[in-house]
Image: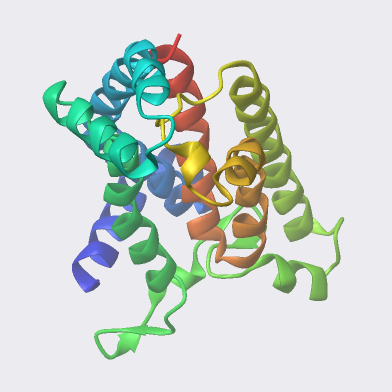
Length: 233
């Protein structure tokens, strides 16, 4: 973690002439963009996988009719179909899984008062008037919702809400392909109905994590919205 802290510090020093006191925040946004660029090949693969799964729907519908009275045989037939067509039902999870370490690294980095036995200098960096190590509750107990730090969070909430609304509307318009076994899995129908609303969970994340991690979430979710609009058009 100390190596990563040094990297953020150096990147913030490079950006300081452009962003001043918010250079570390800009460094986090740049770091997030770099992570998303590295993960982009997996996102492209996930998009191809989803399109392939959509193309399999007629065959899955035929299997469902053929094995309507034998759920176990239906599941096996669908699994064999995916294997034969080299389509993984889990490919869409890989981009998110690969980003998780970067998020948790930022979370721990800006939640720790010391790094390598020394005071964590990153906690002194800010985004405008909001310290990167603080949370929304710190802004509320300080100058309140409309205080200098509170306004920074209101801006983040506005961006995340706009992105979540975009994702929600798009998910409603372009539903995820079926696996062909949904009717055999209890509760899966409910999960499918709730899934379009999951984008709004990022609002909760932004509210409870350190501001540095909230910046990562905001930047990554915005990137995802644009990326999916391009790859899944």
